[in-house]
Length: 356
Image 1 (cartoon, one colour):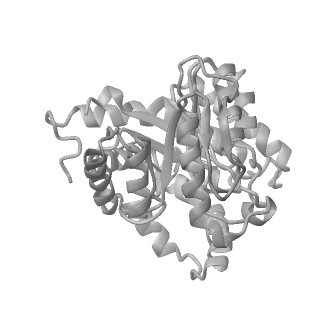
Image 2 (cartoon, one colour):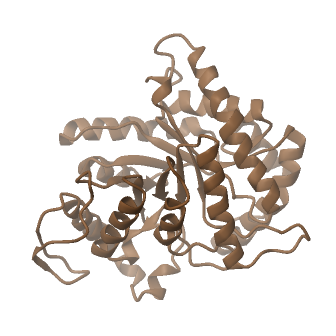
């Protein structure tokens, strides 16, 4: 893979940081902070900002495309993605219309990353039954795939009203929305992504990134067998950059543990121990440390998966201060990304992905 073609992004769910007085900010302030961070990311050369959809008190962003529309008018080059849009509990027609609108406002910079989400609050909130979890996503991604052709659609399923020669507006200037699917590790989801010819975004939030290499291979094999084109895969993982390794870990750990334990209590996980955290920073999928440390770890992950995009979930520490978060974004764009490119460029020809 051409190193110059590798993309680097940042991801956020609109986590609520602390202000200068140590108080957790309001949801409104957190949304404005996400916009400010995206504007800074645009200025320091980050390629993509992806905003996730959640319906929980810890997170402020429930409508990513609305926030992305605000970012679109304040930035010039950064691409604007969801991360993810929970398609199962949304309507594919409305999702297409909203992102086509963001695409217009941003002069073609919109990306949709579809997924089923890591939480289920949106299902009862919008009147969906969790027993329909599989069929909802299967039918809705099929309809969305057809809408991408931007031609009249005839479609029938069990989860929404049928369409008969329905034309959907607005159209995009390019003729097609850039669409990905976020996958957490299900082989069936990887195969589905390949079947529709979408790009694959791997959600890697723990353990060594190398263990996801079989999913990359599966995506490529399935694409070949299904007659679609396998495109460079992406990955996203939590990370945080500071002046030193020690500072980064201390700033990140408290808020990360707080959120991890709160979610873990719902899922039957034991509380996070500091030894586990340190191990995941050293060898797993927490990209926390100084510029050099984080750059080296990201370069290793890209080599291991032959990835074409790496997104850092920069707000995963949750309650870290807003100013420290801004500094992390600045260091990531201005120093980490150029250093990753240098490390990868130093490898022998064809060495990217050789770890697999």
